[in-house]
Image (tube, one colour):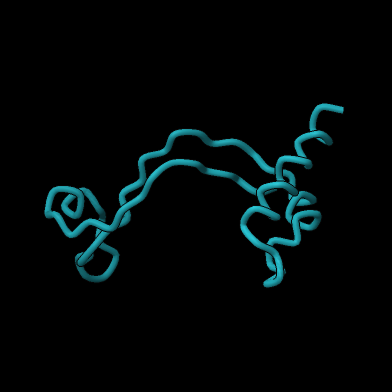
Length: 75
């Protein structure tokens, strides 16, 4: 199963978020800050159907395949 996360992210070097991290070796120089809007599981078969790794596909092609794959979810 794949976990799908939609939202925004940024890399931060501010001391506030960095101070909340537990250092394993040395303190972190930066952190990825996530603003998660939605999370849901994704069937791994969708990745096979989407062929998202195919360099000949455009973003629009991939989005269409993903939209079409939702039909399988509700059948």
